[in-house]
Image (cartoon, rainbow, N blue to C red; front, top):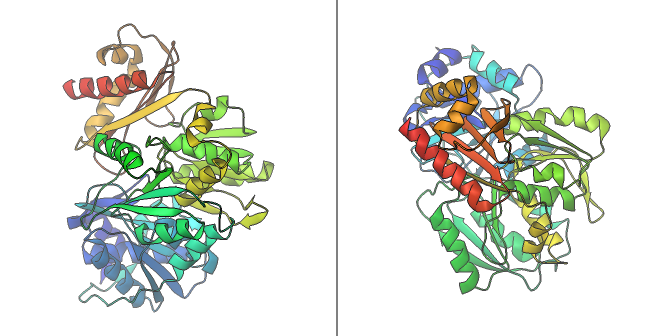
Length: 472
């Protein structure tokens, strides 16, 4: 017999900001089984259930990982419901409605040589306390020797599409030409029917048989040029895409300009008349300065931290939501859209913010909605394959002498006004510019976020900071 804690520890896999992540080679059948046994043993202390749901993204390694998780579930005498390739929020939503736990096999936006597991309680995303309980669980199980065949159930896909099409008139998007950048997104087979059901003409763009690691927080220059080209070539009103598992949106306006995720989240929350928000510290400060919300709480980066604030906010405000700089929108309470109720979905979702933006854009162009906000520009990028230990060491030194560190980054004429250590190192300068550095919680990467009154300045801060850090 194997013990889950030992197998997980030996694998070297840890939880990041969004699930357990590691190299595909680390996610052996027994490691997937160990995580599954540990997760279910933790859930059984709080909930009664006879079924567990599983879904996957389009990574080559995901089907076998799902089979190993399914085998572990079957070893416990529980029924597996397999939803195949669907977006993470589709799996989370149907499982919450059925009051059962679920496992999503996905590495989100990270390269296909890596993968991961996301876990959901019957009432939503697991907490940081749940993560520790899973790592520490001592569930015993037999080694996996054979993988079961899995049959796809389409219920999750159907319910996810209905969740959104039911909110709007079937002609809401009539006359709109919408491009869908499909690549290898887990939801690529759902989006065209969804937008078409609302009256749009849909143009499918660049479907890929190979996994494409789209990072909505660090859009590549190639993808920026693609959007502009597609917008002109097909006369598009809107471009929609997501990251690999369909929980982070990537949308472009009428000009083919990709919107920053936190600006999209702000516009969505405003269109929904949300009263109180929880957002990570890295989000654009226009959220507060636009004065469209009664309350804004700032958290560490990662959906578990955003979700952790919802309970307190719900005691004081009727409508509660959150979003991240990567665009994922979390609905923390039931809400009303067009007089119709939409159930809470406290996990990142890509479709709701896109549709709410399109609904708001019926009166004026998307670019005008964006331009009406306080003009604060953010930019971000990352150094890939940068050891987490190295990132931590650099930031530890920076926290001791922030002004000296800013000088090292090449900003000798900039004066530090204050330092925020909520998550990583966030330095606010006297001129209002912001430099924020933190190691990624999902991969060996160092991320840099910047904010300024000019986009070019925000871009300069990021490029200059990362270049000089690599020279340290």
